[in-house]
Every structure is written in C-alpha cells, then in structure tokens.
Length: 424
Image 1 (spheres, one colour):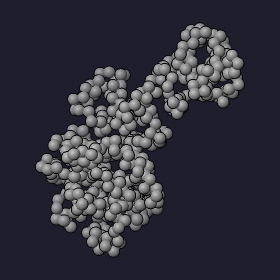
Image 2 (spheres, one colour; image 1 turned 135 degrees about the vertical axis):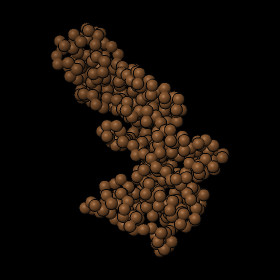
Image 3 (cartoon, one colour; image 1 turned 90 degrees about the vertical axis):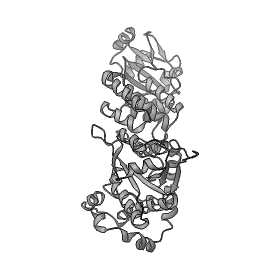
Image 4 (cartoon, helix red, strand yellow; image 1 turned 180 degrees about the vertical axis):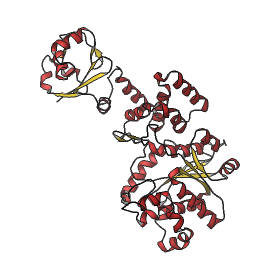
C-alpha cells in the first residue's frame, strides 16, 4: 500500500480531516466511501474531485465504495442550496442511477483481485427502515441544537422559504448510511466535499456512540476558479461527463481554456500525473505560457479518462480546425459546435445549383466583405479560405459539392475570422 494521506496532501486536496485518519490509513487496509446523489442521469465535472478521491483510495491499496443515493435522492441534500430540490420519482432516480454507474466504471476497477471497488445503493436499507425504528434507534442520538447550528441549516432558516423537515432530516440519513456501511463492509472512512463536513462528522459520532468504534473522515476543497466563477459552469451551462450532454470536443475545450492561475491546481486534482511531471508543466507555464503545454496536457488526460482515446483524438482534431486544420471527417454536430459563435448566414440551395455560385458573391452574402471589389482584392491577396483551403482564383464557383454534410460552407478571412454559410 502507498501513503494515501500524503498523496492527497501534496495534491492539495485535503480541506479537513479527523484527528487520527493518517495513522489509521497507514496501519491497515480500509474501506472508504463517497456518496453521489442521482439528481441527473449523468455526473458533471464538479463530481470529478470526489471521484478522484476514490481513485486515489483504490490506487493506495484500499477498498473504495461508491454510494448511489437512491434512498437519500428521494429527500435531497440541502447543502449549498438556496431552495429545496425538486423531489424525483423512483423511476427517475433508477434511470439516473444507471447512467452514474456506467460513468464510475471509467474510473474504478470493480474487478480488482485484492481491493475491488463496490457500488451500493442506499435505497437497499433506507427504504426498508420504519419511521418508528429510525426515531427510536437513531434520532435520539442527534441534538436539535447542534443540527440548527450547521451552516447549511442556518442559512436556509434565515431565508423566507425556510427549510422543510424532509431536508432537515438529510444529515440523519447520511449518518445512518455510514453506520450501515460500517456494519456491512467494515467501512471506516467517509470522504466528500467540505460542505459535507457536518454531515460526515455526525456519522462519525453516531458510530462512536452505537458501536464504540473510532471511524474517520476526509473532506476536499470546494473548487472556485481564480476569476471567482463556480467550477464546472460555463456560459452554455453545466459541463457533463455524458458525451450526449457535453460533447468530447466541448469537454476538451473546457479544460484547454483553463486559466493559467488554475491549471497547475487542476493537474494535481484531476489527473494521476506524477509530482515531477506536474512540476515540469508548471515550469513550462512560467517560461513559455503561450505554448499552453499545461492546459493541453490537462485537457488530454481528463478527456481520455472520462471518454476514450478515440474520443480524445476526435476532440483534438476538431479543436485544430479552428486554427486552419482539415475539416474533412468532422461530424455535423462537432462542426456546429466549433463554429457556434461565428457569424452565419442562410443561403437557398438553389443558388448553388448548375455551375454554382460565384465565390465572390458567397463572400459578400456571408458578410466576409462589404463589396465584390473588396472580395476580389482579398482573394488576389491570398487571404481567404473555403473550408480551410486557400482560394486564389477570383472566378472560383461554389457548388453543393463543396458543402460539408450537404449543407455547410465554411469561409475564413485571415487566420481566425470565420463565417458559416448554411445552405437551406
């Protein structure tokens, strides 16, 4: 076994931990868990930090347990939320669990010989728990005063809408999860985000009271970018791990566009690169930031892990198109994503019939130039491109044979001024 605590520590992951956790991890093989709420059919990049916590746990020789919260998902975690979550139906929760299970398999080895990962659903015990048994056996060990003092509770009570008893009970259910996992799997470590510290410590205390045993906790930092934006959020919304929700191309671009101030931290958080390799990339960032070697490596490593080598290759190819790379082979969806923010115009397909439409006229129609004279001078000067191929003939004709996927024509002026023509 390797030293898990030291690994997490040099990567800057640890926010808080219980007193003797380092000694506990060093002395024996442990089972540790993290819970994932099935609020959607896919996890998002904000889930990657706890997932990497389980990855490091398994790599260090310990046994990771991922809880899919089919039971707690019926209640909803109030942590960090300004208002109550929408309650999901059992059918929606089950569908979401299936999607999450597939994604976790990209990171964890469920077939390892000595320390296989486990995936359990807390609905297996929470839905069988009677209210009277829960209040008598579990509820009496929780102080209302302590629960009211939690930041997640205080912030909601101070608001007009308050907090429902359903949400208020969430921390008890999470504590009970830890107790069940201790009894069933001898689980002695719970990890999570720092916003979960109160809930996790409540579980630690519950096990101490009921089983007379010391168990442990580690929580990770909540990530915000250096610019103050919540990590994982873009102008177009959440960055998902599901390629149907966020394409590998956009996923790659999210990481490639990481701010210089954040990229070394993210390399430590989200990749398994060694300390020496990350130090090399940090040096490159300081001496040659324009090369973006750190961002490129980060985007490659995370995209490869979350998706696949082939998906990474396609994402890299699509990314190069914006810098003049060959367009052939890109899918329609990727093409629209690549050029989603460039000026576009619709032109009837009939205008490209026969011997086609004058390239000069296409340029004017797409507002590449304001006049035909300007367009001719641009072509003669060698500064214009059709589907990223240089055009030097002023009498060039454009037909539907030039249309990508039978409907798109890409024009470029200079290095990166793109225009998209949609033949309709």
